[in-house]
Image 1 (spheres, rainbow, N blue to C red):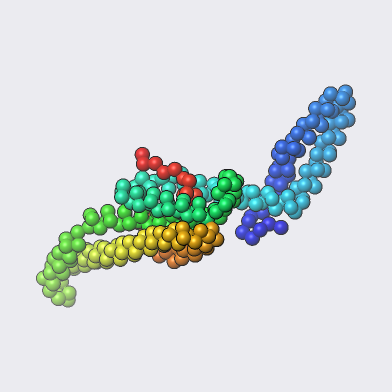
Image 2 (tube, rainbow, N blue to C red):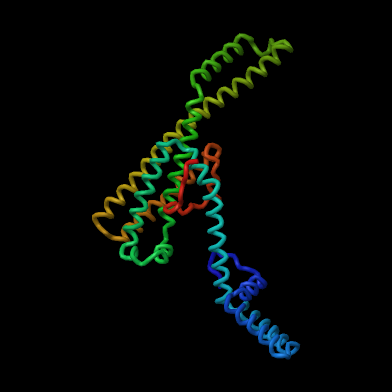
Length: 295
């Protein structure tokens, strides 16, 4: 029985996975070789092939084998999805940041590595296999949200720096004066009708620019608050963990903070046009050991 959320493979996929098992290939190859050397290949090899077919059909139909194949395929798909994000998007985002933001992210990542060591506890000495088995989604999610917030902050600040509110307000005032100078609408000549329509449309665009600027400032303020919140939470957990030396405490606290990221990510959906990141299809990469270069 496949686990919830794990897509089941087709029967022939199970057969293929059963066939390529290294011990099966060895046994099948040995049987064929023995038949060829026996002097009765026309008898032995068909028997080996028939036995192989029976074996493959039996193993491919076994629920436990199917569950193992489904789980393996699911994990491979998740790894591929994360790699897809890590290679183009993660590097692109990191390189786009200004040096100060990159340094801030690396400092947070350093603290998260320290948290991981505290969370590992005695398991830290048991080697990479034990480390790989730990659930680090919480820390990776925190870092992923933090990096996306930094990226959005950088993009918004560039927008705010190149948008002149004074110029927009002066343009609005000028357009309103020109519309007023046309007089009553009922007295418009055909030429004035055309001019009024053009001025009204231009005024609407200018007001839209002003509204967009206001939203950008609100979003920028939200991002600053969230960055400070995440940074403060990680620092607080690290300090408490040093005093308590309790791996379970670290894991529980990090997972608790990560759970609050759902609200942050929902709010960030409004920033997709700024960040260019699809919140629904961007899983958190494995940040703790990912190498990020500035090219």
